[in-house]
Amino acid sequence: MRAVQAVLAVLASALCAAASAQGALVKIDGSSTVYPVTEAVAEDFQKAERNAIRVTVGISGTGGGFKKLCRGEIDISGASRPILKPEMADCAKAGIDYYELPVAFDALTVVVNPKNSFLDKGVSVEQLKKLWEPGAQGKVTRWNQVDPSWPDAPIKLFGAGADSGTFDYFTEAIVGKAKSSRGDYTASEDDNVLVQGVQRDVNAIGYFGFAYYAENQGKLKAVPIVEKAGKPAVKPSMETVLNGSYQPLARPIFIYVNAKSLERAEVRKFVEYYMTHGAKLAKEVKYVPLPDKAYALNREHLAKGKKGTVFGGVPEVGVRIEDLLAREAKL
Amino acid sequence: MTYVAQTPEQIRGLIAKAKRRDVAFVALGVVALGIGFATFVALFVDMLIDGWARLSPEFFAQFPSRRAGQAGILSAWVGTTLVMIVTAAVAVPLGVAAGIYLEEYAPKHWVTDLIEINITNLAGVPSIVYGLLALGLFVYAFGLGQSIRTAGLTLALLILPVVIVATREAIRAIPGVIREGAYAVGATKWQTVRDHIVPYSMPGILTGVIIGMSRAIGETAPIITIGALTFIAFLPPAPVTGDFPFLSFEWLKAPFTVMPIQMFNWTSRPDEAFHANAAAAGTILVFMTLTMNALAIWLRYRLRKHIKW
Image (cartoon, rainbow over all chains, first blue to last red; front, side, top):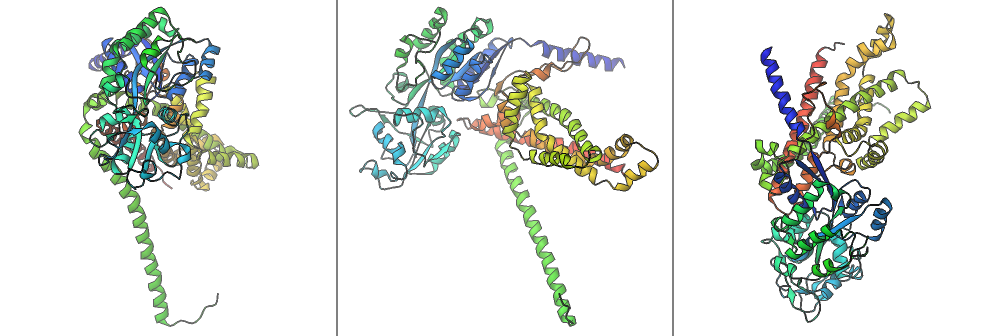
């Protein structure tokens, strides 16, 4: 009987130890594009704090994240695009102020099968528009229709599903209007499906986030992009995205921090950790980090209480990060 | 139909034809079973091979991580287990009680019929609808939060129709003479239900519970809708505490994730090493389901031993 009691006592104390690990909590939600970076930061931050501060990260999409942020349910929201006007209005109505902090670049990458050689010299935004605009549906089906020097072979298109931020940005940057795309292509929200599709078909072309290309470099070939006539063809890489020459498909991704939450020590600590270690961790998960100056500016904005967004609720294409951070923010 | 006189040859021919049909049906049945079984085995073996290298004790004891080799399913399997406990604790008593009432007590008229039809139809409602209902009702109206209890209640709602229907089927299989015998010796309705109906229908009810729980454990959509997390590197508070009253139900309010969400996240990663993690997690999820079913089958076997009629 004694032995049983002793075992129970040990068990109980072990369970208590587990229970007393409860502490401050930082709640994060939002975009699946920002998730890998935030997850890496959360993982290391929690370890650095020896689990005294707990962090949770959910994935409910950029739009879902803003909804939760403006309801005051979460402390931080990840976003693959800036906050839009209706979302700003929601936040304003609920009296929630926020900080907009760019944390990394996501470079959309146009990829083809490794056996494709006619696109080695690059593809222009103009040509991509011919391929992807809604008017091309059912009409532009062979490569030589876009450029006579290209082969007379069928085009197999692979792209993001219509619900993703990647789709919004690609159509905005290439076609000129968000969500405006031809519909007769293989669409998937799961980028691995697109990777496999392009890998299997010599005549395929597709687009998705840089990280998926970086992990599959042996199976795919990235196509250099010519922004405007007369400009050089630029291949996506850490360097070309960072120095701003890979345009217009490189976009910053953000975290939005509830200003009231930031008054709590644990949230402030987490955001500071993000700004200090974010660059290194973004690189580790195959995202392109911002220039060091950008993180410094972010910290300065936090210190000075520069709240709100610099976009005014309108999405933009091809903005340079320095210009972005120099702008005046508003709520 | 008119019967014509037939020669013995004709009759033998008829018998042979009937026997051939019999063999043909057996063959069809074997093929049908084979297709279903082979598909499951192929999928499971493929998953097992992909995930085999990742199956280790550490895989169970580690939290999610950005490094595939260090990522584990601790928060996911604990979350799934706790949610399933809540689901069973809510759905089984409610479902069984509702089933018994409908079968034994409810007056037989059109209102009851309407309720019955609706319950049967509810079993076919897409799970995301339950997720949306739970988000509005449990999370916001009742303020239960994005917690284990909300998830458990949501999945309980989802499987409630299955449990009710199974309970009714099981009760209907009990011969009427059992009831009549009980009433004949002066038992009340409640005594009959408690001492005869419930014990005898238990094996059938358990089958329904197995089907329901197996559906619930693999659900992702309603759980994501009510706000399950993807990265969570801590466990809910322990149910046993050092202070009086030694039991704590704080874990019901804790944030959580479940196995299918963890799996889904890993399959959509760019790094292929995570796909092995997803396969390993899938294998574990299959084993969790099988364990749950084995438990129910064992219970059913034990209960059946005592039924003699």
